[in-house]
Image 1 (cartoon, rainbow, N blue to C red):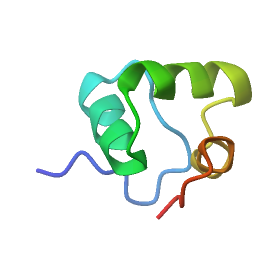
Image 2: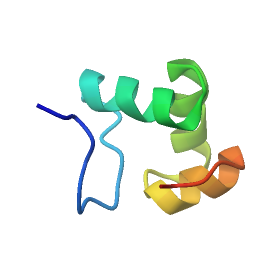
Image 3: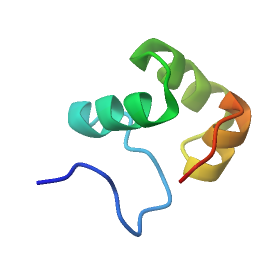
Image 4: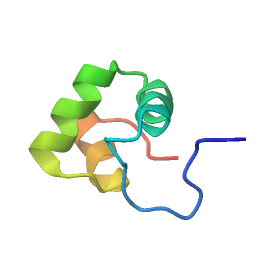
Amino acid sequence: MSTEPRGKTHIDIYDRAMREAWAQRFGVSEVRLRKAVTMVGSRITTVAAYLDRPAS
């Protein structure tokens, strides 16, 4: 089963599998992903822009 959130707009930073999947997708560490969410919120497109990575 895929942990990729189809149709979701936010990253659930408390869900370990989702956090790992998004960190891998963005090519960053989980720590960097957590910091990004802390800085800009959990909306996927906003986190992607903050990390300068494509959201899809």
